[in-house]
Image (cartoon, rainbow, N blue to C red; front, side, top):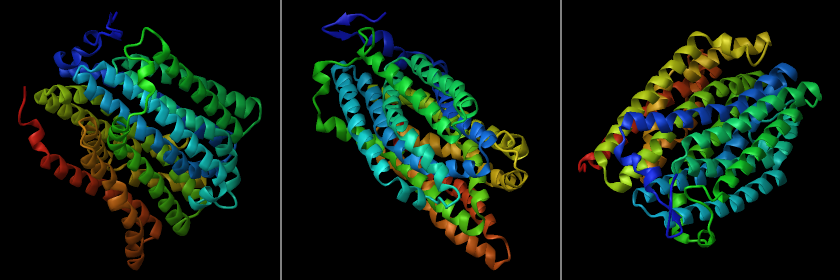
Length: 463
């Protein structure tokens, strides 16, 4: 049990192992709970889509797909603070400065509350306009609106949970962070069939199940930092806003923020292109495939979250050889994870798709969509690892360029160019949209490799 010294918890018990324990052991100890947390968190979306697809219908799935970019934008604001504060906390703990760590906790909490409430209010005011911009049609907008009106408060609470569970993990409690998210996801899984089928609430039932679950995880996360047994906790000095702390959080968090924002924008672009060359059911197919892709990305992000406190702490402490070791190990695991996910999705797409829909037309559309979307996920794992590594060691601009490469630099323009090129040769435009995704994954990985090589001096002076 950590001990009190001068009003603060002794750091040795919780952080000494980050600079002494074997890297493989450390990565397993931090990555497994983080992966479980991410996978469990994805149950919110997967459960909603399965129950809505089976209990409401194909157009409801399409309507839910329209909400994904909106929810990604809200999640982007959560990642802006959550990733930035957790990365800074790890670096500060490497410098053995607990008072500074507590200031990060207090400032990031205030930042989350103010920003989260503002974003929620904006979405309520302009909801219909936003949904139409992201590809809703007369047939799907009612489903999307009904879901979002209920789930918006839950998304605000998700930003609170995302920030606090990241800080819980970074301060030496990876398993507790996992258990908090696991409890919320289990509750969501229980409430979904009760509300959708038992109460007959349809898509609104899925939204209520998600919101109640998110509220539960947020409350437990706050209690962790109120408890006197926590490694770092809320103290009076930590609530005073410090501009340099907010700046540091924002700079590091800008990479995942822009990545999530770009994802929302690119999904909107893709939805409009898909509607142009396909139709509502094609948008529904993307909604299903995005569920596979998001699940795989969350697994990879979980592994990278396990890397983050190890890399950040050792970067702050100056142990660059350990920094190199944890990067290479994380990269190998993430690339292998991407390859396995790609193999399963491309070889057995129908098995996965049938979990979400029994509509034969939608299944036939979703099969080739799955193969194009998932073909290069091993390279996606490589790109994500690089981006998260540079976030962890306070290299925000490298992280930003790496994280935006696939979607903004390559996919957004190619989704317009390639369909036109394909149509000139008599190939369906929708195939061009799918092909743009595969090509962008390859080009993004190439750019990530170039940027990593350009920063090789980081590993030159080991201690």
